[in-house]
Amino acid sequence: MRGPCPGLNSLANHNFIPHNGIVTLLASIQASLNVYGMALEAATFAGALGALYGGDLSDPTFPYSIGNPPPVGLLGGILGGLGLFGRPSGLSFTHNQFESDTSATRGDYFQFNGDAHHLQMPAFQELYNLQPESPDANYNRTVILAHRLKRIQDSVQQNPYFFYGPVQMVITCLTTALIPALMSNHSSEHPDGILSNNVLKSIYGVTGQNGSLVYTPGTERIPDNWYRRPILDPYGALHVVEDIIAMGLYDPQILLFGGNTNGPNTFAPLDLDDFTGGVYNAASLLQGNNAACFVFQAAQLLFPSSINGLLGQIVLSVLQKVLDSIGGILADLTCPELAAVNASMLEQYPGYRKSSHAV
Image 1 (tube, rainbow, N blue to C red):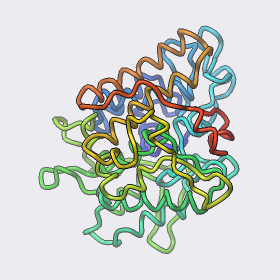
Image 2: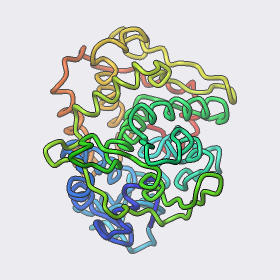
Image 3: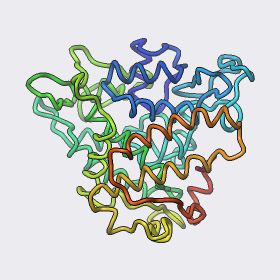
Image 4: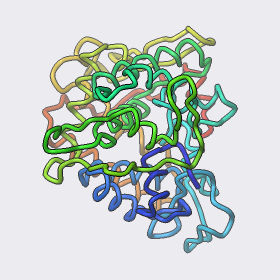
């Protein structure tokens, strides 16, 4: 099984997690810590999301497929294999949960007949072209932010069901920030890392030179002579906050929640004032830590609403890991208190309503 996350695909190809692509929650957390240099709270957040939305919640180890739904019987918990919405879906079919519109290299779900897990070469090519094909190439945060903005614009212009809500913001901000933060090759000369053309291609399963790039699904690999983040600087909560703030400062459009309402190029921003009962608005979102405060608080409030009445304590035991991770992030910030959101306002977006399992 291989799916939408090149980092997980690479881990499986190198046997840091099981080569078949079926991984337990604990194993995914351990590999993220040891191989890529994530901090515990960030690795737990990512792993728990995968287990919650794509995994077998009837098994106490919370196994999940990093790609397609596993064959019947491969996951066999105490209830015989039971996911949040029935049979475990795997990460490839978790649209608007783990996988979201505006991915750096994957297509939007409703543009590609449900294929949001294979790399789309036009999106990768746009990213690749942002640096010269030379020893000086470095796909650092500034470069990735330029690509992030372009991917949002692409979705607005091309995807009639584009939806970009608070939960999707958390996930896409995190996955975008992880590209330079975790994929870069680190050294004493470059402690922040250098993400070269060849490293980028290798981890995304792409070969060839510009003009003849080829993507081969399932071939993602960590290149030779590659070194992870420094062990004393794991990528954690404060790095996530810093990256979200940097996105808003780069261009406020990156933090403009909403979606298309009537086909391509009909983007309508979510009225944050009404959505949050006056706690946040478009202007205050760009002040201090407010952008990070809002996306994490909104996620805390919206996650439980997606599973009310389903699987009871089994689901809540996984969900609590997600909420605990978010709570750890918020503990380091001074946030206006957001006690509730008006989730019914999301119904105005066809992409929200049309998602296979809306959150």
